[in-house]
Length: 621
Image (cartoon, rainbow, N blue to C red):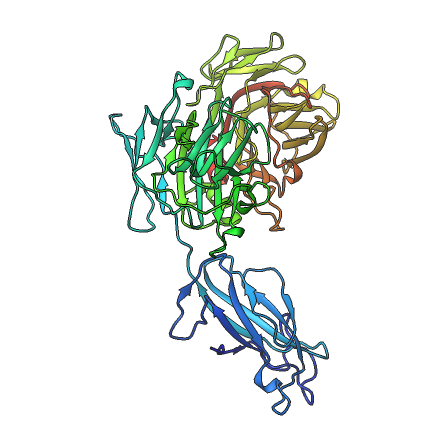
């Protein structure tokens, strides 16, 4: 049906997206005709039905206005069309008077406007035609297991499927010694699936649904937060088994030392698995990591273009892997078994039991887009990204000794004080503090404690000795806290002496290459110079891995610094260092690429997830 065109301007109008030229004797092209080839339909005054979904292409045909077609010859002066869709940067020029159908891909749900102008042989653009259509909200998760329903008496063995899409729910049963843990991705008052064992080699703990929540022969997405206790063996986070193999497996590969998402080419013994591996080797154990796997059929019956792709912390890993390239003949097949959380199946035997914790499992009966998975990895809770306190070295309860214990639920190793220049002493209120002499003193603990390719937060309560700081040379970089990385620091809270009487706080991330050479450094700096010497202050740095920069193609994330609860500088992008992961100790008072800090540390805390300004105000003081 030909669109009921809405004129955005008269023939002589020439706005930014409008007409140009002299229409007195030789008018510019009139508003062109737009016809939808589906699935979207034009809104009318009485009818505006949502169709499709974000990311689903629509086909539109452009033709000259009938008044621009010579009735005798059928010829036209129209040579091209200029197209703009709501939410897309710039416009696209489509050549030809009768070009093939144009593909428009809406990025969000709701009302969308496709604007089209025609151009004539004189390179003049005419006024626009507007085609308004409604995009339906994409279907939600068809299965979701948050493990937040931990029974108060500890005797339950079932966790609810809390998804709302569809009518059938698939509750999961905890088996083989699986239980709940308070080490959970949403932090306090939350719980996760505990698949730890005092005898890892004998572990057989897992959770399973009674039936399949997704059809694995059609497009689907699976997602989970995983906390890997060790990296000594292949371990499956999620899988959908068949008789012999798994229709999919989201897992850790000990052989490749990478996260992986794979499919069995067929449900038979010794079949070939097609796998999408993570970009980075040696992901750290003892941290929360968001994993997702996408199987995409491209919405057609042609299995030769089916792909799989792994996402880690919201980022695509490599390019989509085409399943039909496997040596064994690939066939999209359906798992008739329940979703397995914590184990998989190969050669007819359940194996690859997971050691650690699994949380926030979800499955969708569609291929989520990269931008969708960035939002999923944000794990928003009441419009705030959820955070989990994963380390809390608090000197307050301690006034003697040579260690500061981790008081978080994760039981990290203690901060060990250096033999010289560091001591625990009470402050004026009788609270413990770690006093550092600024020349020899430091403390350190085993790290890392967060997956630094994802969002995280570091906060320290610190006071700087003004007298000792005044004696330091210009250029001195006093380290409050840092994560070691091959002779550098993957992140650090730093006070830098810029001049005799000028010092500036910053939150820094550093990148290194395979040889340990520094490849780049990005920092978020304080707005003003440091003046609060000899006074405890809260210094907080956040890395938001899903922050979108001005350039939508930049997915590197952003750094931000807070002093107290006051937001300071923001680095809009973390550039090429975004995928940096620390590997050594967490240090206080010094670092390999920094100097000793004179003063005292009261508390050091680290969260998985980036605290917002509200989160800093609520959790840091």
